[in-house]
Length: 254
Image 1 (cartoon, rainbow, N blue to C red):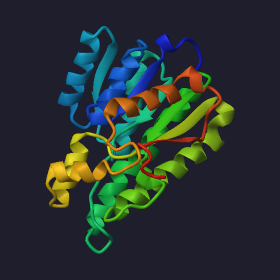
Image 2 (cartoon, rainbow, N blue to C red; image 1 turned 90 degrees about the horizontal axis):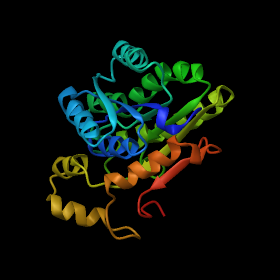
Image 3 (spheres, helix red, strand yellow; image 1 turned 135 degrees about the vertical axis):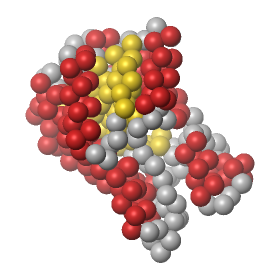
Image 4 (spheres, rainbow, N blue to C red; image 1 turned 90 degrees about the vertical axis):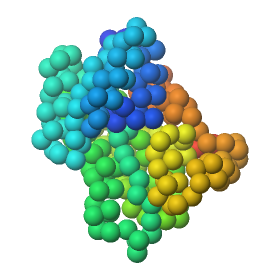
């Protein structure tokens, strides 16, 4: 990423969710201009307003990341609005719990659309714009389950493993354009998505959280802790880091 970090423009997809909104709040500390993109545009507006109220700079954008034409239009709109694009963080994702006999083909396709196809489409649209600026930084959000399998999460594990490999392939392919691509792999994080998992499995939320905390650090993660890792990988302090997978999971994959 060329130039001072205070002048950068960063697109965050899934910017209204638990981790996405934390990323936006964290990046606002550096006076980054944020494009907060989410399928739920009203929630994106709320996050953008929160950032602006705290003295940051942010604008909301609505986008269905499963639609290639909408993703292309999103990136074009961000560049038209702000004049450039220097960074991208792909947070948007979802989970459908089940082994392969429990998942329907529609579940499988939707999980890949939300978690892997969305990353492909957004990065595909963003990379030419990053290259125009002499380079930039991409941070994708995978999962500890993209590195080690978990029970009754077959589609999610497969899709997140794809995110890891896609990120490393982009790091190889686009380094010559000055583009770095890195991946953050969270463990269980205190978000509404984790609560939805409990409901999908028919488990009491409190019991599910207690089980999720069974890891060396003895707790689940907080969205701000994932955002700290994203901020590092997007910024100049990680200027010699590309193709890395930063596991932020309290030791859950050990």
